[in-house]
Image (tube, rainbow, N blue to C red):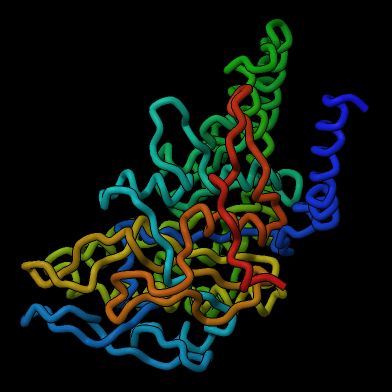
Amino acid sequence: MNRRQFIASTAAASLLPHLSRGAASSPAAALPKGKAEHVISIWLGGGMSQIDTFDPKRRGDPAKKIAGAYYDAIDTAVPGVQVCEHLPRTAKLMDRVTAVRTVFHDVIDEHAAATNRMHTGRPVSGTVVYPSLGSVVAHERRAVADGVPPYVLIGYPNVTRGPGFLGAKAGYLYLTDTSQGPAGLTRPDGISLARQARREALLADVRGQARPAPGDVRADYDAAIDQTLRLSSPDFMRSFKLDEEKAALREGYGGEFGQRCLLARRLVERGVRFIEVSHNLNFVNGTGWDVHNTGIKQQHVLIADLDVALSALMQDLEARRLLDRTLIVITGEFGRPPEFDSGGGRGHQGRTFTCVLAGGGLRHRGAYGETDELSKKIARDPVSVPDFFATIHAALGIDYTKNLHDGDRPVPITDNGQPIAALFG
């Protein structure tokens, strides 16, 4: 054996133990994998105050500028876990819930940038338009049933909720009025079935003469047209007829937001994979969750509205044996600090805040992670936004370690996040 052969064989021998250990514990085999089939994502635009909801601490005093919670805390179904006094219905169901109290990001505490982070899991980029969580789930899992979209947004559309480089097939169908369904999917009264058929035949003829090549932007446009035609069927449009539900059930969900949550449940039954439901579109408390200054005085209205709808949604899904198959996610762009501003309200805080998970077949524990005495700093078990997204992907059986591709460029699906292991197994 010459010198070169000796060096090569010695190096190979030194690697064998490492290689065998890697083969014995394949990363794919060790990945947490849940059995959820759907996501209902509730968006609390403006930034929910964690210290006033799911991570209560000692009472503060805005008049005396003493930092602390705005409300008293109450016990829940999980020993040792408390929530705000305005969440009494949810408190009784906290054994189906995990309030992740230690989510954090490093985005400047400004709404647009933080909203983008909490939808895409990444900072704004000048070169890449990243897909939203809903679009990634739509891309990876598609719709559960034929003839329905994989992703529905019940709220106002914008780029942070969109498909980014994944293209139109991973986009959303949106609506803001639950009484009418999505605009543009209902055939006008003056258009008969025969006339509609003639229009579709003409469209097919035109498209047949100039079929776009793969990667052409016109291909995305054609895909959107095809999906629109499928979704305009009476079967799917029936999903939006909330008056088919019993009056008592509808009333149990509460007001406008509750009706959106009821619609989300109906869309789950139809086979939609991911539904985002925006809360408080019309600012029922005057300011929304962005409770600066005197806006905090009506914050309890929002909390109570969330409590009624969320508890009704969980119980309704459970009664239909859908709760273990449906992951409910509650997020906002950031939280609020324990200190009060000059007007008695609260500013913005991204260094630690609470996001909520419910159902979805996870091993719930009421709360995960621990903050300091004022919910201002993380004391134990930090959860980054990529970690939180990886938890959602894992709950859906999506490989959170894989890459997506922007053209030839690989993009980690969750920016290298790791799921909360305690919620699996």
